[in-house]
Length: 333
Image 1: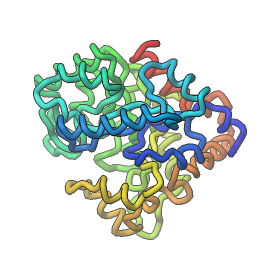
Image 2: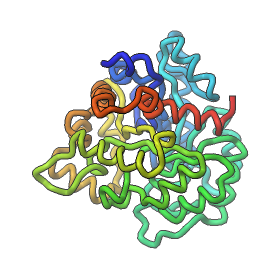
Image 3: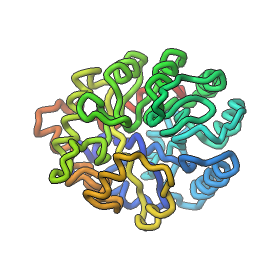
Image 4: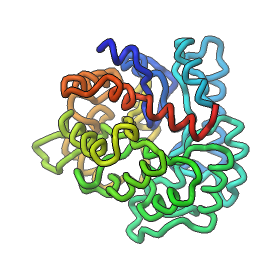
């Protein structure tokens, strides 16, 4: 691990699940994560139960985790040797028809939320909905509520039109915590230049992802590797500027990865995921780029950026400085 990686503040913009064991995060030099604390399709009761589990972990004596509720908490967590936990959602289904529930979830600790996951809900369309409709009336009310409660809006799985309308309506910067460039790999989950530029113009951050299907050319003989990821990263940096770029692995983190894979299974998978897994394997490491298939290997990206001539300040911004700055803008303090 390079001295710069060890010294820098490092934030993973999206960890989709953890069993509570921080070992892999520590091995990768991670200081903080946006962690999905309720299942992608959770309803109100399920979200409450799963977030309560995390509240219990945070309350344990000598917990390795520290809840992040405002920007200053990042420094407190790092100084204490704990992993900063940003409670996040990948779907706002727990709101049902009641955006005012965000007041309750904010009190528990929610600080980042996606309006939709891949498919349509009561707020708007996800990125796999062919109709590509925009925000509903309820969705517009929800955007206002996210802003009121200073909950950062993540558009990673949100449909194009719904996402663009959200950026236009939001009074605060929006995020793409784990998304790549559609112009480089033409998949529904990757984002158009129009949306990437809109998020950046609003002051937001795009977290480039090492998730294999989003970096894949489609060649069954060529699993994507670090160069394929860097192609996305370079493209996004050239398009919007280094000050709007970070990373979001879309990895799980924990001790029992086989159990995590079982528990987080969903019956509605994106078709490109099925194709990728059929070609390269269905285990968690199999789903990520060759050579960087877990948190412990993330320093390889830092080394590659330094070898490519990136300035130290730009590497630090990518590793977590940009997320920290923008989340401070949204949350305050």
